[in-house]
Length: 204
View 1: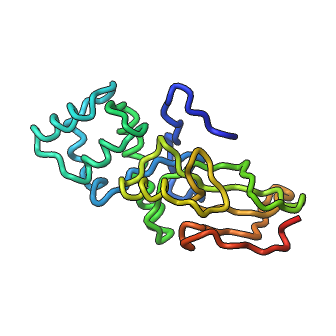
View 2: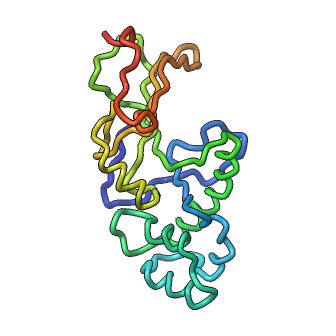
């Protein structure tokens, strides 16, 4: 389903992650930047819940034990772009989930990233009717990315699929049959440094 940003509400991310789950959630907000996830002790200085100005929270952390730069980037970049406030309860939840996700991504030998699963993508190329699996891992405005990564995503102009101005991180094409997925194409234009063509036999 297409996401909407009415009211700019936080995306609903999973509340319970399990290390052995192959796809933790359809919306994953991974708060990974430098060594920020190692600074969980500093979160004890934050309120348990409520919305606060990000600058006030940073000053509170600075007055306690000093706020580390990586954690400051997480706080400034959490939530909608240019947002000056932070929902502490949502931040704590996503931070806690990210600690589990770091182990999950490590098992895949992957650094990991935030994404929203889009299961209704439409590519520029017309595909055969038998291609019923068309999904993509997408960036989203409300998910966290380090500043340089977010700026890069906004500059990408060669990709098979875009949504809300963001390019797909990766996409898969195939067939759904008897409760199983048969994947014919698994591709990342970002990793390939450009829009790479896939098997023309999939096109109509």
